[in-house]
Length: 113
Image 1 (cartoon, rainbow, N blue to C red):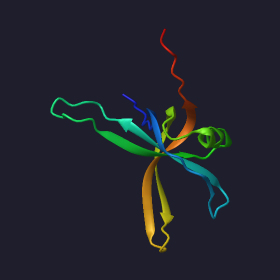
Image 2 (spheres, rainbow, N blue to C red; image 1 turned 30 degrees about the horizontal axis):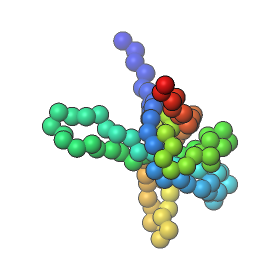
Image 3 (cartoon, one colour; image 1 turned 180 degrees about the vertical axis):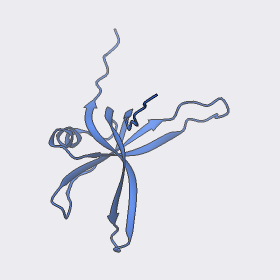
């Protein structure tokens, strides 16, 4: 049986952190937004738990959408989980996990009649 590895992330949540486009030393531009997503309920859990996920938008299309998002907007994100390595402000090596977006879409909710 031949299986292939897969790194696919789909999130639906609310924007809780608007970012700004940042030009990296390499010349690449990234726009990061934070999306808060509820975790699936567990029987033992009596309170709502959430995850705050950083979403990195590298392409012009995803950066354009990210630039129009505001705190509280509901969004759908497709992409893959990445670990990015960089140097912190003090020069120490650091890393972080984030979702590298291939698609970002603001969700508009239909009004009920």
